[in-house]
Length: 177
Image (cartoon, rainbow, N blue to C red; front, side, top):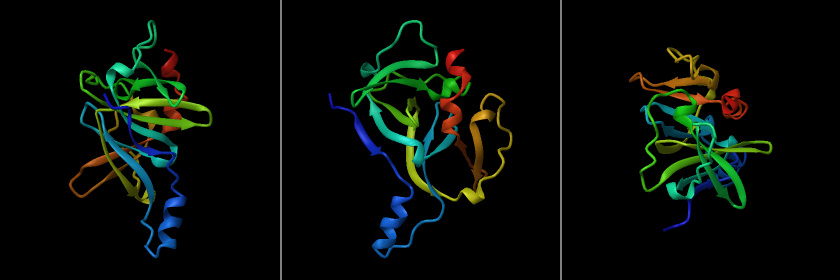
């Protein structure tokens, strides 16, 4: 079977607008974010600056670890580094389990300083420039995800995308519970 299909590596928001301006293209408004969906159907976003890599991971390449937290699916080898893969929906307290019987699981590797964690999600969306100035205070956010939501964007059709705080996720005490 094919190795991991990598969609992005070490994204840097600051370099993209500069490169576009050098080519005479007007830079987009806002900051670059990756959109994705959890098994619950809820749509979320993470800032591209905190994402190390996005990949499709074959389930058999995720090594289960006995007696680990039920939030963790196991570990993967990411370019010689062993990192944990977590079910983001379970971490956030959603009852819907991630379907690991698929041929590939979308995984987002986030990092802060020397800490890296891979988050398994239901499906990946697009990279989009989202204006952080239009970010709203989250409304009707369940208590179990409130500490990890920085805000939300709502469109005219009342569809919302919630912005997650990857640093709060990485530093959460839920990992040791």
